[in-house]
Length: 282
Image 1 (cartoon, rainbow, N blue to C red):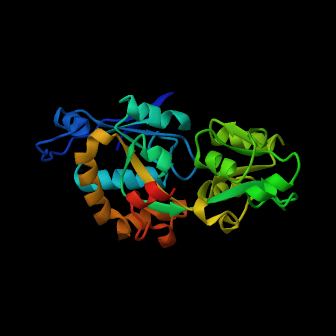
Image 2 (image 1 turned 135 degrees about the horizontal axis):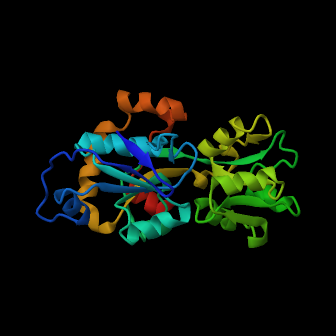
Image 3 (image 1 turned 45 degrees about the horizontal axis):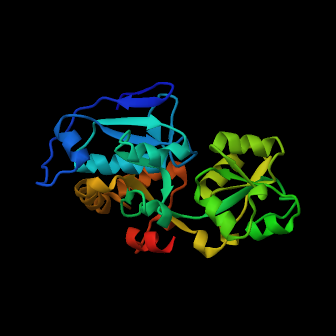
């Protein structure tokens, strides 16, 4: 794949494989039939989705998505990097056909977009200063530590989780993404950051011992989540085919080999959990 990174997007121009269209083709199948690329939107999130130095979409969610599309015979892909909060609005505004980058399947999101069947199961963790001097392992600890501030991405599941656990807006620092969240921690403006466990571990490993990740099991069980790929509701025909290819690809030797670099292991496979269940219970 020959990806080119620009200031706002990554573009890949590749040959389009042929496919059989259903009689009720949705907008995405119409685009494919017209020879147009599949447009993927993602945010620059460690481990989940990011561009490498050559502009190639990386991260386990991007790689799984591209692997499934390849299984389907589709390789003409255009990928755009945007802020986390712009993913769902961009999908609904028809700027993207698919959104990746670690989107949890949540009931509130299921009201706005359609999801593939899950591609991963993961929990959240806190990023805290080395030694965790304030003992901040869960939301209740933030509440108990007077004046403590918890950083998080605006629009992330951790915003709702924080409120469900009783945090006030004054205790929550909502930021655009990982760069700003890490800067808040480094500058001492936040006492902890609520992230996915993948991100927390990654950022701790990159901090030269300045930070550590807390145990995800210290957070409530209901903060365990399932990652899906986002689509427009109108693309039900494509989602059906995508899910069929997902079944063949997920957990395959090829996929698990590609996942080693991201720390995705067998325990992250979404065994026996459906999108319908996640939409109703998360």
